[in-house]
Length: 174
Image (cartoon, rainbow, N blue to C red; front, side, top):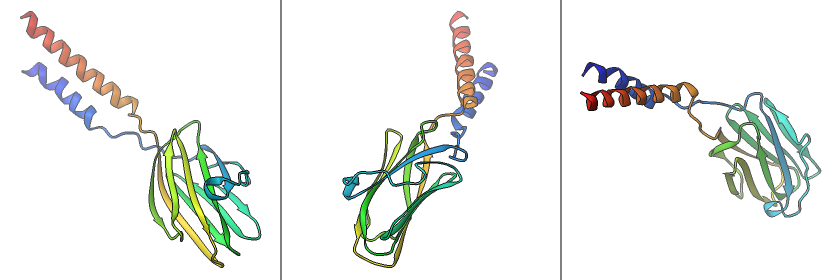
């Protein structure tokens, strides 16, 4: 019985260990901004097209000012409409730490954002645009990398499993 306790405790600790809570601080994030519904007009309008956190993507013309700001595990998108605004599609990727989650925290976009997803490690956000003037729209998202367990957690699980296998072999031999 005593031989079972230590491996069981180690295995329980490993299973209860939290996943790594990484953020995008210091990461280089690539972005695209294409106008028209679902980016149908094409183009690349961010300046710059890559940022390192803390940093922001930026675009300004006579109709609007668009920004996308990454801080830690938050993405904040703002569209300051000066004189009506075409729809757009924004995409963001980080080759070193692909995005795994995207959840909307708050928004006042009107009309609402038509789509926001993360697929294949890439965030895509679509908006249909507006005929309104002199308004500022903001959407805030929680983002996260593809979840991977910490190496220490994996080592604890492995140690616990080895202990349980050793215990089982001793019982069979006895």
